[in-house]
Image 1 (tube, one colour):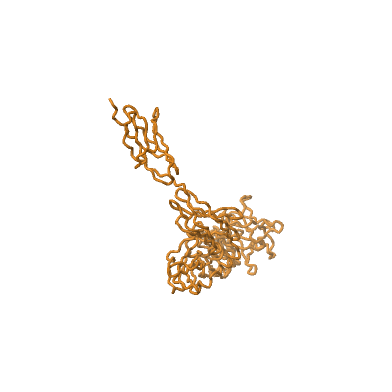
Image 2 (cartoon, helix red, strand yellow):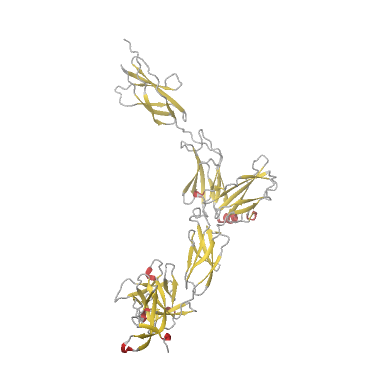
Length: 580
């Protein structure tokens, strides 16, 4: 009897690996009632087989096939049949569709060119590369000639130009370019372009076509170009614009500017992005829309928006605090925007762009100050104007009694020793006369003396040990004067008049219920250098204790802390209020 039954159809054709000239795939083996002899590999639509595979002696899992000699970047459809020993052939399997890889790199079509358009900006341009598939991206490589540091710029939108706005002063750079296709094939490198940023060229760029740009604000400017193309007889103009500030130094197109203008156009109003540099190029066109030359470039720096609503939010004897409203885009200008603070027309501080408050310290008491706030981007791009606000510091303390509580140890107060040469110290409040220090102001020095009311000695820096603070006889010497400086963190610092920047600091150790004080460098993070001052009054009272004590006249201090009044336990009545 003859065998007329063909083997089963091979199943599950699966691609394993594809190169530019070969394909590797597998399939599940066929079965037959007598036995499979071999497998035939066909390309769909072709009569002749392209490969024959012998049946393994002991089939174990999928059968592997390698088809080589193929063309790169070409689609193939493979089918498999099986033949038994009686030469019965199965039906063809389902097709396996594969595409060999593209191994052909893109081709550059001309030289890379570079041109400085502004101090920190160069325009790189090139002809459009070609590829058997398509060009996926162009990659510019920039190398710092001195440090050899490299930076890559990737262009994926098909553009044939790129603006690099990250050139640093005095440095020389070398640019090259390659193109890539979707398979990752890279073209040969282009020619090298060497460009340098110099101080001399930076100065020239500042005045580039300066007279042609007018009415500059943070959001608009007018470009006049009617007299710049004489002799060319243009039929129209192509106007394009870009602005800086995007990541990686890439410039972005300015919406609505890329357009054609007719030959009658002699000026154009352009929109600006506050705080950014802009590059506008105006190209003259012939009647067919072809450029007559490369055009003229205009560099416009838009100032940041002005600050608004500047106001005084706090005043003290030596401090004025101001607040303003920021109107700039903090996210776009992050890390570049700052605020310059001016007092009386002079720059006194620069704060971060996110800040909207500032406290001016160490001012003269009873004095008026004018303030302005100018947003700034970079070294010189400052807002055009600023509102002005005036603040007046409070009058100084004079011949008043003050009690100084330590911020770090709130229940302890500053005291001057009763013996000359003894250290000034801190101890718990007891409500006796030593807790209250008489403050005398010297208008000429603009500084205070701290006076012990018992013996009229004053608080001084020890001449032998400049860190030590002692009680001494009042000789009106510089080291016996102090400044009371309001602290932004709260409270005041007591600064030596003779040693600017040195302030009083409370020690941590306590001996005989006292803490010593020393003169230290100012540290804004140190609460031991700050005190809360409380103003007290000296009044004459009559104390009535009853019994045979009768009455007596003396000075008593009433120290007001919040809503609390600390007094002795006597019945107290102001003598001036007594009946005659």
